[in-house]
Structure formats: C-alpha cells, structure tokens
Length: 184
Image 1 (cartoon, one colour):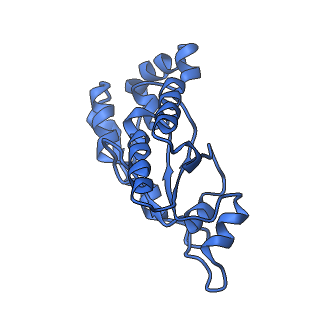
Image 2 (image 1 turned 180 degrees about the horizontal axis):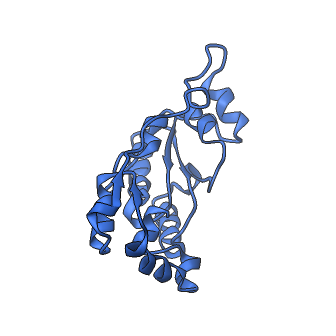
C-alpha cells in the first residue's frame, strides 16, 4: 500500500471509494509490514493491532544501478542524455503532493536566479494533486522561473537522473527513511 493511500488514497481510488475498502481490511490482516516508524504509527492510528505490525525499515540500495558518474562521463553528458539543459540541477524525487512540499523549491529557485545563478529544479514524480501542481506552475510563472522548473513526471531512469543532478531536495514535512536519500 502506498504511504499516502493509508490516509488519503490515490485520486482514482478515492473516486471509486477503493481506499475505504482497503482501510477497512487493515485490522483484519494477519500481519502488516511497516517500512518506517511513521508508517507503523499511522497503522496504529488506523486501529491495526500493534502485534500485527512488523517494522522492517527500508535499507539497502542497488549500488550497481545507483552509482556515481563514471570518470569518463560528465554531468553535461548525463543531462543531455536525459534531454535536460546542461545547467546545475536540483532534483526532487517523489509524489507531487502537499506533504512532500516541492512547492518550496519554486521560491528557492527564484531566489537563486535573483542571485545570478543559472540552475534548474527537476520535479521527478507523479503529480497526484492537480490543483497543487497548477498552483506550483502559477507560482513559477509569477516568479519568472517557469523556464527553470522541469516537470519530468514519473521516470524509470531515476539512477541516471541522480547522476545528472547536483543536489537532491527533500522538503517533506515528515518522512521515515526515504529510499531516495540513500539512492542519491
């Protein structure tokens, strides 16, 4: 179960009332695996008995896939291979939802631009809250940085994106141990 679905459900599942059905099944399951203390606490708040929750923190990264640039490869080449402009890049990897707070990167990139630094923010992840995404786009337009915000969406090339980026931003209000931190 995707973490957001524990409390909100995806837009489609909310429309179909699927996530309510999933929530009602949680206490009936024989066991649940929580990959963080935060998810464990959310499950308890959803009336899942504590003795049915096994906490197995996410650990480990495929270091064959997620590795630094090869000595012969440049950031510029890595960016061009992904169709990105060759400029310093800050990547946000995750669902585009208010709890993850990627909107904070819009005024941040505006401030960096104001200081004369030519860089970009790459938003890599599904846009699950349409109104939130539209507000972010309006903010970028109003601040004059819409040309510096790349809306990549979901990508299966996350390891290549990490190698092409200079900074990872994770401005979430709360997280367990995000895999993206270890991957970066």
